[in-house]
Image 1: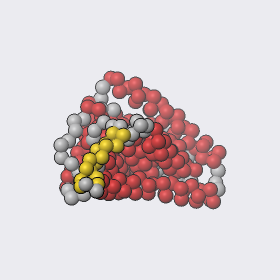
Image 2 (image 1 turned 135 degrees about the horizontal axis):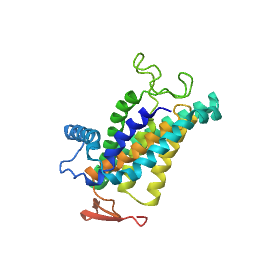
Image 3 (image 1 turned 90 degrees about the horizontal axis):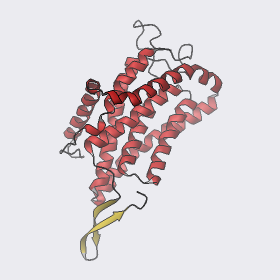
Image 4 (image 1 turned 180 degrees about the vertical axis):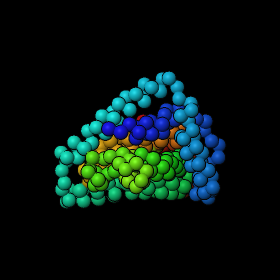
Amino acid sequence: MSFRGVFSILAIFVPLALQAQVPQQRDECVATAPGTCARHILQDEAGILTSPLHVRANDLLWIAPFGLATGVAIDYDAHAMRSLGHDPQRESDFRRVSDVGIYAPVAGVVAGYAAGAVRHDDYLKQTAVIAGEAMADALILNQGLKYAINRQSPSQGDETGRFWPHGTKTWPDGQSMPSNHAIVVWSFAHAVAARYSGWGTRLAVYGLATTVSASRVMAREHFPSDVLVGSTLGYLIGGYVVNKRGEPSRSYSFSMIDTPNGRGIQLSYNFNH
């Protein structure tokens, strides 16, 4: 087992434990202000990368278990892949499932923003923006992590998922950890579920995230620990962005509607909240 990868991951996870303390921003990211959106993403990345400097003692309550779980998962990875075996048809089917599943969050963000704009539902529109921002944050951060961790995938080398197998001589040797699919879909899932906390919404988004993540292992694209790390990091990023940019979840919403008597206000209530 290589602990270099584990320590690199923990250095990124630590900052997200402070998400509840991040102040909200007044300016908004909208389709007509791409510069604001880009600035928000840069602020997110800077905050995530520098906040290890603000680690607190009680953060160890989740850092230690996560570090242990990651270490155990890495140690078990090779055995898991040997037990799974090779099946080209199965791998192709699950690869297709995960690829289709990763398009759903993108479609959800676009559809949510459009629906919010048409219905004048600012809460829905803001949710779409927050989810999209979380996904962008996750994807950008993960590219750096992949090169820093430099882990071979299940189809590379001796198929045991070695970290920096040849030192710096042949870098980069692999980009298996964390899983891109997992980190993106879980950042989306947490952002949406935090804003719309009804059981139906949570079941849908977390079910999607779980399906996509598991499919990456079944397709032999990633080891279980790659998915574990990606899923956890994505979940934390989603919560970080919600607390930084959004409002607490709510059980009701107001929107403008057209009626035979002119413009009116519609009150919607979520009884599953």
